[in-house]
Picture 1: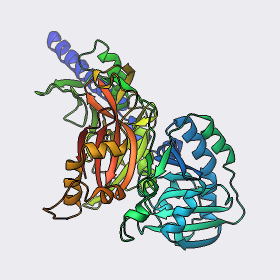
Picture 2 (picture 1 turned 135 degrees about the horizontal axis):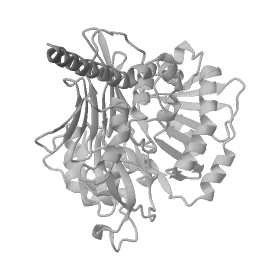
Picture 3 (picture 1 turned 180 degrees about the horizontal axis):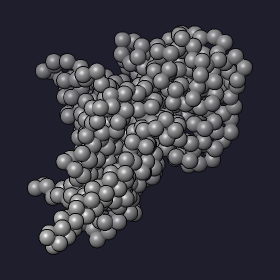
Length: 483
């Protein structure tokens, strides 16, 4: 009888130990619930995730450049951001102008800032802590800000929704960008021209075409952007795998791993799972790290876009190493069964150049917020090891310029151009659409693109009629294109 009582007592102690350890583990897993609190949301610096994507500089006299140096970019934005939002919230006059007047202003000594995503001014004001945005501007989606050197109380902007240009005069606040021009000129810079000037569009195209095209195109790109050696943030085959995954796992599961199961998928991915898929951390062979959590249907609270972004960034920041230059590039929102799901897509930089995702449907960093809960994070981030001496780039003293890229791939580009513009022309010749294609260029950026598992290469990302072409900057070849 005594032995039986001892056995029952021992079994009871074991069950109690299991229950208590599970409670302790659960307490360690509540990281995200704490981060959803109002106090934690206020600690996230949203300002750092929403910044201009392109910095275009006009020196006047048909001389232009683009700034990629992150230090100078930061200096420009820190100087101009207060002026921009003070003017928008406290202006004297608001005037609608035409594109020609806008381009003329840009052609003088000026700085043009292009924003990466389309957000209403009322939402941007929330992110930047700006109050009292006038009602007539609340729905405006500013995709460009233009600061003219000699007009110290003026701000120009483009509304991306209506494609309407505005000139706004500040009541009292003024700007002084003269020192910024001195800093830019003190560094080695690449000469650019407006597409309209480079191809004389005013004389070669009719007024029904985009003859005012003020997209900047490099004309003397002798600077060589290096190829890079890269590695995955987490490498399944690395001896340091446990160290690489520790920070991320701690953000997901807390400090306890007693009840975390390790599984291996047939595709080689490794999955760490808590419970019956309540939380899961997945690492793929390609280096993609993702986290998912079951939605708690008992808490159907909804949050604003600003708070959802704060929640997303609050979860993202401790989720492994946060790379440099993380910037919000896309926002999506959908309503299902009365619950709003908000999706935030980010890019990042290696050096001074943004990394292109592999196609237009993906983003290297993506966070999903359902209601007031972060339910999914995906990161495909590569880290820099060193410059790479690739055979494909040996012997080059310059990279291909944009016109060379288009010309050497003219057949592909022209076929896509006709297709994208619903033009059916069986008699097309080699020069018929030469200027049409160039007038349709709406964006040119130098970026990095992943060539293979261990290398990034510099590419030109050129948008023509809504299609993005990725040109290898050293060979001029089209790597891919998409709409």
